[in-house]
Image (cartoon, rainbow, N blue to C red; front, side, top):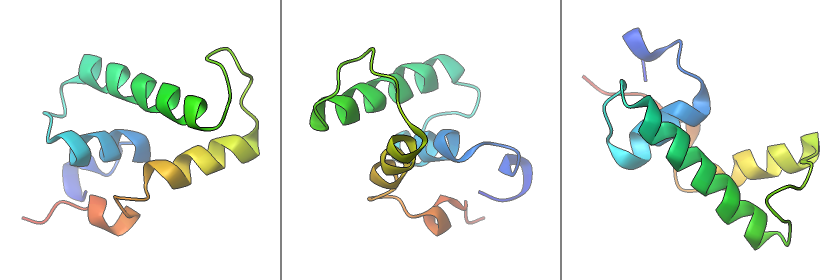
Length: 77
């Protein structure tokens, strides 16, 4: 997303793209990203209290963006 959304971190931009939510919907984002982490942890045989390594975090990020590539997160006006 360009312009006013440049300061948003990539996970939040993914949330906006996946859900079409309003950028002010921070509560929705927290619930969404938490559910995405839970989904990924379960798919990878980890429990919700697992300490995620940097490598695992990178794998999560790759998984999160599998359907939404970074370039697709730019809003077209």
